[in-house]
Length: 299
Image 1 (cartoon, helix red, strand yellow):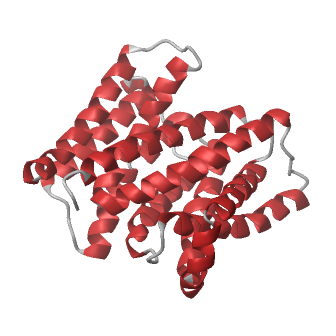
Image 2 (cartoon, rainbow, N blue to C red; image 1 turned 90 degrees about the vertical axis):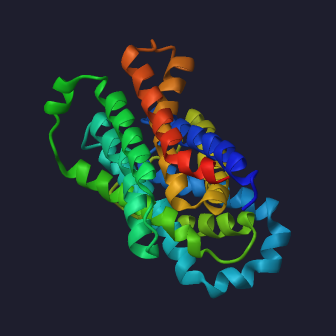
């Protein structure tokens, strides 16, 4: 790793988490414009089609490598992309946004635990402390800084789905370590095709239940955004970041997602910037800084 690698990784992670955060906003705007499985399937139609065109020469040169690792590709694309999004959208129908944000905020801790358990590399104390501070920032953001709101939270089936979704994405993050040795575009293209294949049966099931809804005109515009940015560019940048600084360090940045959600709400939806939001932003950024102290000292 070069001394410039961390700086590039930080930039990639900032942009990737911005796209993650915008995905939440786009998801909310898509309610009533299309059904959940339509989003899950069609976003990968767009991403896969774009990648098939952009990376066509590299795909022709490297497709045999992907084919030789098809069980890995199917698992990573199906579980990390399709199942994660299905559980995320399903949990949104049965639990509160506060519960979702808090549970999702624990993802960096889960990444550290899984990384340690599978790789035998346990992060230093400062990285644990930094990750914990970012989780605290998410809790402050989700609860609006109110202890009363936290005490009134209840636990239901949607929370279990969200916990499972967070664990799945943590496993996906750690699993990137064993990806096939192909160019990033080819790898993401393979994952997009795997996600598309595994989402088709779910869309058929939704249609069989009479719940499938094709996108409206506004829905197609949202899908184009979701397919290009959160689904394609975001995953490319996140993959490159994990390659540069590792899953454990990259995972800590994941808690910038709700922070960017706050920023986008203020900038796009013109919501007021509350004091609790400023505290939450400071905690998340401070936690990331703490987790990186030892790494910067070694550079």
